[in-house]
Image (tube, rainbow, N blue to C red; front, side):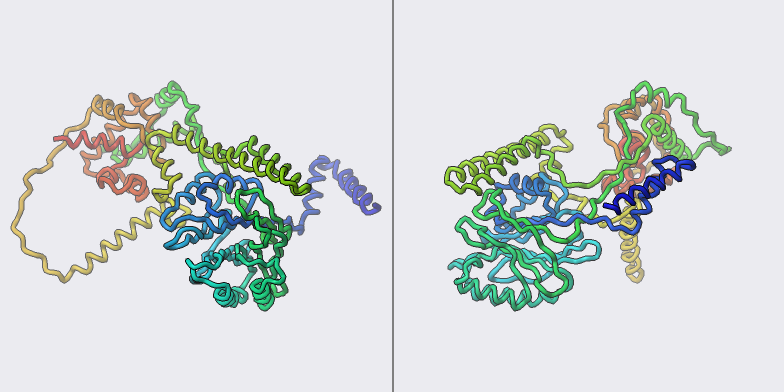
Length: 572
């Protein structure tokens, strides 16, 4: 108590002495900053969940709601029942809950089985190649946070049957050989899953052998109590016992919140949760621009004078026009940077669902405190109603996305939900500068062409009879203002992220801009050159591999508009 009083007096003293030079607020801030020096802010620990789903194909909403409710970092699922060639459930999960990656291994050539690890996308994950085993299915990963590596192995061991032909002794032999590799691996170690061994039965021979195997490897099993409707402990969490480094696991609990005959196992580890990644985007408030303001700003804009005595070149025209549009946009809708924190999001999970979830929790506690059959039935009924509401909310969310999507976005939304089409962004290499990445692509393929040409220097060219061209392009008919206005007004309002002004806004003030567009197009053909700023690889990369001419002449404000003008000029 005396130390607290002395600290308070000291704070007051510092503030009092500094009041002559600075304000009291500045003095307190400076003192707190000095006090915080050298102190480490405690990091948030990672939360795990383990669940035998017995098919997640119709339980995506329940799975997502559990992750959101418990703020789970790593969710392990056994018996996913995801077919080897049917990944719709994974795609539906990703469309329903963002911020997580799925690492799975479906059962090959047979129904059922399958394991999956759902991990927050902020973690650095590496897949380990530990081979295949006949008696159990597994996923083997390493998770790295702050240079600390943890090896996580999820296992599902099917019960012995005539179909799989695997006995418990076969599993113990294969699992022992696998443990010999795992226990000598660097870093921390967590093994979890459904082993289908009654470890709670002290007289069970298989359980005793399994326990002896763990003890021989200095491993310990942490789950206590029943994890299955039959009353046995089948779902296990295993980690090192005495060898360093030890992964501290605490608060191991199990509940019946999810629809399955297996309980949901939850626990906390000392693995740090990485900070959420942030994305900086440059945005403009385009909707705030009125057409009259845009037209007036373009009319008042003063063009840059040219000192070229032979006339303005096509490069100068292009640069001036781009600067004109950029300056007008900066004046009416200045660019602003917005930092977006990439968090896990489930937009369909509402406050009403949270209230229903609280009621289910209350009924579950009532059943556990008074294990009567009537309390059990009431709890199961409320749990079923809650998961039905979650499924209904998720379905309505995706239905509204499809109904509100235009023709261009409709197929993208359907592909995202069904997983019929892979995302093009996932196949691109990691990069910081999109322009440099596009230039690297261009240099790579140009280099391949040069190498191919160099291999042909010793090849004798075949002698072919002369073939004079049947047609020649000697001149082009310049495009007029009326033709350009008609064609541009009738086209779709498509734009590129590289355009200084969206095509829709260009069409609003087209009478003030059409002369510049016509002048650039006609001057380009008269000089026989393309503006240098339009020969960037990024422009070609953004437009696609269609029509080399349009890629090269993709002009401001967009390749589509300039392509329309080129079509008119090239008419014979």
